Image (cartoon, rainbow over all chains, first blue to last red; front, side, top):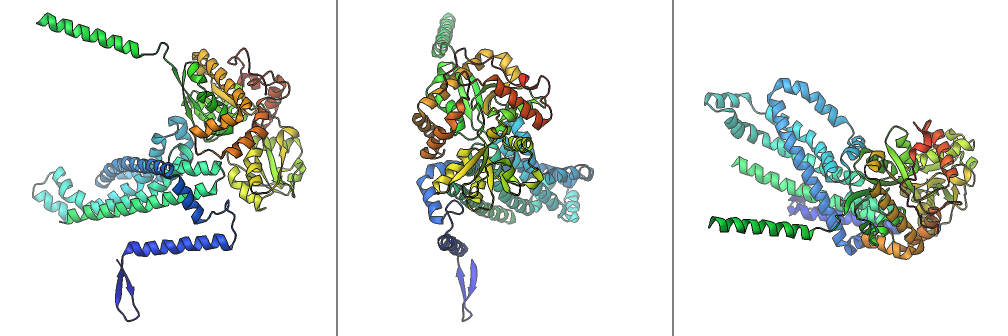
Length: 259
Length: 335
């Protein structure tokens, strides 16, 4: 809930979704007026009405593409975190391993993803395998780094206490490492999910024949600016939905662990 | 009881075997994957129409058609063995083959490229020297870049005096319409048709008229795959050329077939205009024996231009980069 101060000092509470919706409406109105007043050609910037009409006349086409992008995002994200979490814990716990591998991880992360696409396409062809590798790659770094930070943030005396109580490595992981690192992990998930959607759409554009990225590419080939803008807007909306869902799941999980 | 069970088991096995044999077709179709040069459009319409007409099925081929992301990427996929056959510009395929990739052009589809510089009618670029001092859009990684360079070189144009902007062909259209650039290197259909729909007239200066007549998009394959299964490739080429021949005879039906399979393709009117005005005329050049085979002189010129562009075409030169061994004995007649 957002609080809005009234002239008399009373505080009004407006639902956050209402505030966001209002801002979006203002943005769309500015866009529509700008297109009309400045007489912008449709092939430079289409009006919001044309874009909405385009989407409304092809619901099945956009739904299929959106589901495809969603599947790629989730598969890539799943693969990325499945590798990043164990690696993050291992690097946080084993100093020599961190010293040996961390520079390599940073090297891989700083490598522009886009430059490895042609090579991946030659090796694996177009499709889910290639694109999900790219998405997983983008997820790996934020999640593994946050995992390391999470484990490092645990006070050392907690480990001392569990050791004196006779807890083994599995119990220590279950009752100390995992719950204490979880807030960091969740934050890493949310950051990487936002990145994952962007990478998913870009990788569909260059290495897949499905999804919203492909729809945008088709728009480019057909010189159809309306289709390109429609694909971009749906991708952005998908990002907002996934981010909201991630926030909700994060709150539920953290609440459960606090209890 | 044991004998009864044994005979029951035997009967069941024999029945299952017979049922399995009965369900198999007399000659199982051979699987084959073709990667197109780009998303399905007029360039690949012959393959899509041949498939719609059942030519591949009749030839015993179970064809998987995969959209591509440009001739360079398709050539690399074929060279890497991820796909059996590709539709790509001959210059891209030969460029990769000259670096040692085992690629061969097995059937030219567009016997000459129609790329050139598109400019607005009121500020036309009519000869290569006009390019000096102008801003020209080239698509990153596009197959026409070697042609652009060759045309500049052959006509004594100083490249440093041409302001080159890397913009995708489609992205350049609004820039040209708004006069932010002076020309685009592209196929005429990619620029002139969208400009015409907005009431803007344009002109095309063709590379082929200024010393760069190159073999255009072609069927390409890996040499080792060709040797392993020559009959399959012969059947594929035959069915494909028949498809393009039918496109020339019935363009409207072919566009309908393309749009039925790929409803997100360009509108029918645009595809028809591009196909009939610019694409079908490229199926044959003067002196060509039929669809799928170019006159020897065109290969010679292509070899000279590409040698000038790439420095060397590697072992065997241009002759080693193409073959007519997979063409049918009777080529479809030129339109």
